[in-house]
Image (cartoon, rainbow, N blue to C red; front, top):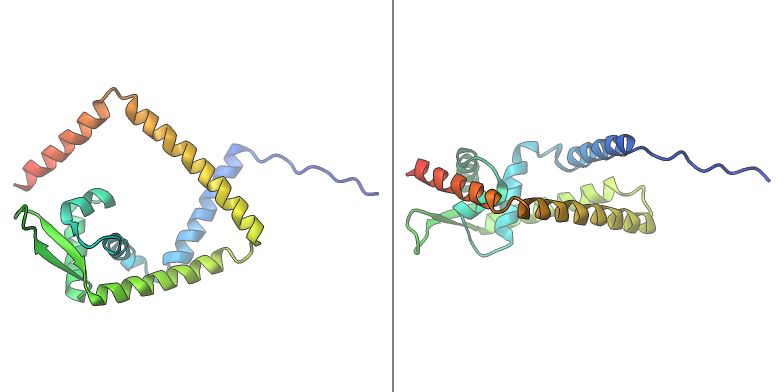
Length: 174
């Protein structure tokens, strides 16, 4: 009977390189045709989750510069995918909503994403997919818990810094 050898253990560095290469392929497979519209698609996804979103809330969720968001919103407005209306509660802020055209674009984006996901993971069996999902979920839970702990251990300084940044941004806008 032939001797079976255990596979060599994978070093953390090798695992990180593999993870990085896989992430690149996922992004390429997912957005290679639509790289220009990726950020716009992200905005449509966020707007698709709720009736309306304030421009300020969208800015905080996307973690991009105000000027970049404004440019993206102008393009989406011109294409007819969104409408911007002044908030009744706070006239300084805008509320953003998807239009019928925006919902069609969002559905098309979702369809393309599903096709990409099927193509990217077609080499895995159902059991392998479940194992991969469980491992990734476990890693993310640990990383997110560490992040929350790090933020909490800042003794409030992290919260104060974030508050100051928001205040400074608001004063600059005025």
